[in-house]
Image (cartoon, rainbow over all chains, first blue to last red; front, side):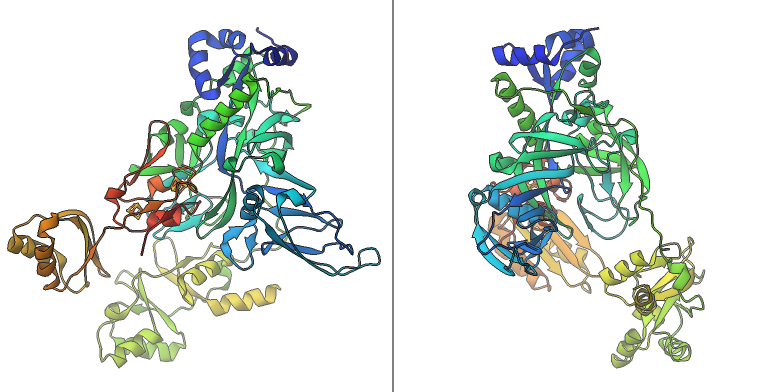
Length: 500
Length: 128
Ligand code: SF4
Ligand code: SF4
């Protein structure tokens, strides 16, 4: 078994004899020389990733004002930051949205603007104390004016990530981008062959204290990230670095239209080849890393799994989902990931970056648990009206009008001859038909693309759908599309009013 | 040149196109067609010197013609070459190069705007 000490590797970095390759190059080297040959030959393997890292942010310290303030609330360019701690520290989270500009500008944009040397408006409020009498503060700062700007990200660098697709009939706007209706596309993330944690899945060299490339500067891993889920090979890391030293090429604010803001961040992790096992792990290729395809049409934490694919298949441009050929998009840039692995390689070769072993290992066991919810979430079935009145699609408009008057329901689900849902007709549709002098059949005036619900859905999901579609009622159907009830926005608001 | 032909849903599209081809004796190269109960929209390539003839033949039959000479444009400073746009474009304007660059072939663009909604970096725009 080949063993190499970290000191030996760092000695080679200092005397310029170190052999560094990227994780992509390592695949071929191990194939050619075997793990033991590669372990002898190669000292460090570099990895890289560049994609949306939503759980990121920057701690800033503004220095004391005159007279001093203990900020209770603070905004940077109208983006609120967290300041529930002493005086003039604040945490700018990347996904916080501007209170005036909405989704087009968020915490990530404040961070990028600071890094690009732009000035940022600060507004703070406080309750005032004997030691901090000031209650209001307005100033304009740049990165140079503040004491510290430390990026501290609780969860970055997912080992791998799910593939997202959409079985529904409308476009979904998600953190995985726009998902077109009817499996119109599939999106994926993470760098596959270059993914840092996939190249050291046992976390032998990646751990607390490991020195890394973070946003174009040297940074550190401070521990396992939140939601670290090593048992399922979804490891994450927590990282820290000095924003003032970073390069704006690798710290890029983003907006996912219809979803919100995030930060595209470049991370590269060097893996010192201390033994054959580590060498072998860095030979992982796109074909070896597989991930699940999930249907984002289900608004639940348990999204249906539609299959498994490898990164090799994803990068080919199309994947097969239940017999359909679906075009894929990556949400993270493989080109920039490659650039990062290359840049880190150059730093090490030039002796500017010394590799380290972790002072503590990340746990290799453990799962990410779902939330404990102590309040029951009511389901559509619990609050829908079960005594729904329906009308046949070949009934006359006159009959529909009569039913609405008799039943006092404003919405009549329309059913076909086998009783399955065909549409919906409202008192408005009927008035309109009368006004237009159009006394046709119900099927001619009904809305056909009916927004509907199922009884096992939570009311929060149903309420969101009502809202999104701008309707006030939905028929509830069973799995055969038979109408079993109706749920209205009134039912839901009454329940929500009781909840709070 | 690329044109967009819009017809109201109550006009049946296909005979119009056939009639126009017969009348003008020029080929309309149809690259996209969306015809349903709400709209009829066709994207076609036409020879530049036949455009006037085709236009009058189409408009006389109630169709609306738009010249599509302002394809998608990309702000290279904003683009990070993630490739998110690749999967949403119906006519494959965006493709990955050998080195994972995201290449742009705007000549194919039919100005549908889908990619604008996809780009996380606000790099894509269509001139109105
Ligand atoms: S989605 Fe936007 S940032 Fe990504 S490659 Fe396309 S244009 Fe560039
Ligand atoms: S506007 Fe439509 S056709 Fe043009 S590049 Fe974007 S997605 Fe493709």
